[in-house]
Each structure stands twice: as C-alpha cells, then as structure tokens.
Image (cartoon, rainbow, N blue to C red; front, side, top):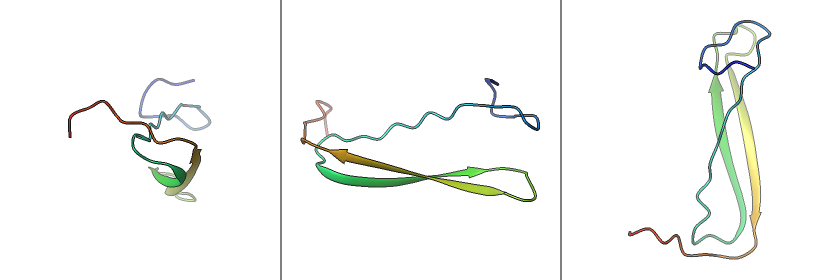
Length: 62
C-alpha cells in the first residue's frame, strides 16, 4: 500500500474520511469525489451512508 497522494498504476492506497455526526440523528448521506489522471476514470465518487442512532453534543465551542 502506498502512503502517498501519488500512486503508480496498480498501486493501492487508503482514503480516510471523517464525518462529524455531532448533533445529528438519522440517515446521513455524504459523497467524496476522487480525482485521477486516469483517462478512463478521471473522477470516481464514493457514497458514504450512516444511520446515526442518537444525537450527541460535540463538546466543541460553536
């Protein structure tokens, strides 16, 4: 697995996504666009779905 934002063909990497669920409840749907120089797939979209069961205060100042 590569640890860089630049990958060689057939090299694997990891994408970390964080969703702030503070003060939210119910179904959340977020998308992340992945841009590439691949001529066949210059953009891929990941769809993230989460069912937040209970709203919790963030603890951070507004």
